[in-house]
Image 1 (tube, rainbow over the protein chains, first blue to last red):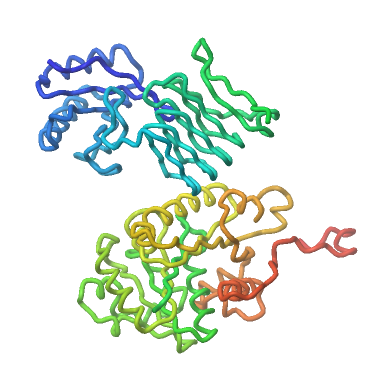
Image 2: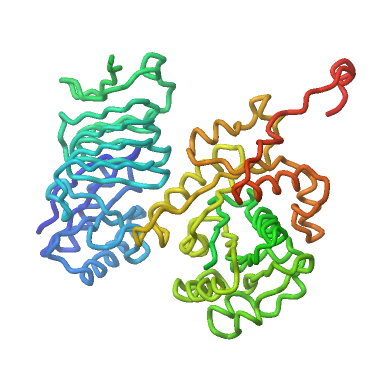
Length: 222
Length: 271
């Protein structure tokens, strides 16, 4: 039995519950696991499957087929599949595939150093780096910058910035102009749907986590 | 070697096809041998705007699939000898286009033409992807409202990351911003985004502003590209775009609301 505890991770403004499945998973236990889940949660539509790397794509497809039958029976919806071996936006049995570094393991492509981007990050683009990210241009609405380290934006941050994506609570986000949709550090996120205060609008901004794990946004005086 | 220009936007109904028809006609009337290609397979419209819908025998998909030669499918424009139209298919869907097939057609067209204007469908699926993939330059058509600007931003991202030039690491696609359906009075009243707002968000050079006008609808209905409607502001605005595209220095027009005269202000007429 290799079903791990449900890992909860936050991404964008939704919470997803990840069901991790290994080589020796007994599918009948998946059903009981999901029944437990329905009892404990009201996020019934945000179930995500992730698989051990020792499972090949053929068996993953078979497991997805079996689990989708269970979810239909239980009237819950399978949201997507986390799988770094399949191209992003592709599908396994009509379920969308998301590439997202698994927090328990290092992602396959390692930069582990600062990624510097000299062009605008436009809507729909997603930049992921294991390390810091520096953007010398702006980040549009609907774009995402995801770093395991810090994020520095030498322009306007209008999209989403997710720093410390593997759980580093000391990561920080810096932006010269700050009107983001969402900010997150070490899994703590906040969707910004209210007006940004005047003192933050006219200054460079630093986002960090305080000692009570709350997001603090302060103006950086230059 | 022809220059490939894609007219794109992401969002539908912003004026891509109107712009494609006028832009291609303008280049052709300036003496350049131009072909305009409709990539909106299944929802073909360009032939209507160009007024040649009854002359479509073979289309783009027939050529891509090898059922007709390019020579058979190209339709010569009724007003201009330099202009040809390659119509889309009305019966097939967008999956009928393949990257290699489209590439071959573009290569073949490149031998004979100065400019290849690709009229992209809305969306970011296969049809619009193939329309922009081979482009050297792009005209991003945007309406002065937030959803259109957002979609244009998305398309600019795709142009800079997924186009042939981006994939092969060549110099970037040159993107131009064209704002259409612009109504200066509504901008002054704060109901529409201003040109400056749009430029601030997208940060690409502006190639023109086409004012909102009822003439465009009339042009579409009669199958005449808007640029050919003599003495209308839309036609003037499109000629300015052509001028700027060819490197002329043209002052921006039609972006300010006309000042009301003394009597109009007193009696409130003129709206």
